[in-house]
Amino acid sequence: MITCLKNCRLVQDGTITSCDILMESGRIIQIRTTHQAAHWHTVIDLNHAYVSAGFIDLHVHGGGGADFMDGTVKAWHTASAMHLKYGTTALLPTTTASSAEELLKTFEVFSQCKNSFQDGAKLLGLHLEGPYLSPEQCGAMNSKNIRQPDPDEYKMLVHACPHIRCWTIAPELEGALKMAKYITAQGILPSIGHSNATYEEVAAACASGFRHVTHLYSAMSTIVRKQGFRYPGVVESAYLIDGLTSEIIADGFHLPPALLQFSYRFIGTDRLILVTDAMRGAGMPEGESILGSIKNGQKVLIEDGVAKLPDRSAFAGSVATADRLVHNMVALAGAALPEAIKMITENPAKVLGIADTFGRIDIGRAADIVVFDEKIQILKVFLDGTQVH
Image 1 (cartoon, helix red, strand yellow):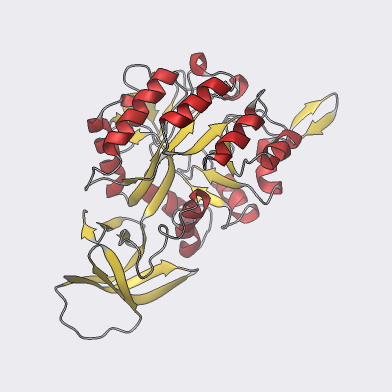
Image 2 (tube, one colour):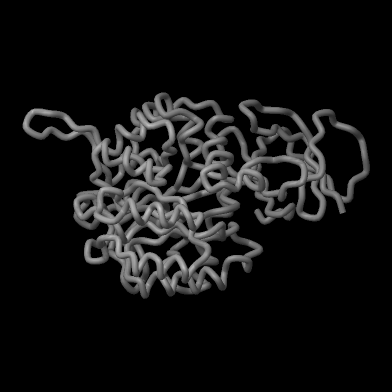
């Protein structure tokens, strides 16, 4: 039962290559750079559309009117199915700062959903954003749920859920470095975010296992002056420390074109990861919405293509989809298409340590494939070799 994707333009390895891709039993079995006549079970002529590995979103809270903190299988299915339509074939459902009880409920739902959706993005694990964050950099997080790292609590959470893959923590908090060492030993990636750390504190964090920065520029320290002296913060550290990868929300609002260009030029294509940070308003009409769970979340307003706090004093998550991130890196940041694709396929796979199975179109890998046009509009999506959109 072989399917041939004919007349593809494969975007990978810094180039665009004309080829045919053969799939069987959910796997890629051959990539032909010369078009050979043959009788396949199914031939899908893509008419020279672009093809890449499925997009991987490391930081996404919800979409389609649902949030992963809602605590229901229905909400998880709604959000993962909505993002699949826009090319995201795998993602990390992401929490907001909340109580331990609410996190444990989220863990339960993940266990029910992790392998159950045939028409939704694959769930690679969980990204916990908080609750160990800086009160001064809480952003749209509910400050009532922000607290210092508690070894009894975070060890209990780790043991309760073996599927935590990334944990956003403010490294300057008391006990945060000890926590980072602990979770790193458990195979969890510590990420710097919602942090007021100085450069020296970030350097110490890297020595304790931190290797990643959550949504660069959003809710984090930058240069400050104290008695005339200037002190760099997390933003500057992301540029200076080669061992750090950084997420950027390339929705065109969280980072304006100039900052997209700046991060692209000076951090570069090997260390940048495109994330949506999408909340439930992604894929929905503008108007009132909720950030976080229906029960305990905060009211927000979606307007001008972004979610805002009701007083419009700050953003409250994005409503972006993955295809828009790629489009904006090309159109606004000036990245070449293969570079932009790498930031949402290979780079996130490497950050999670799953680059041997995700992030590329190669023989033997799962046939998670996205087909799109010159405007990065999604034409088709294949999940394990089956066309789902």
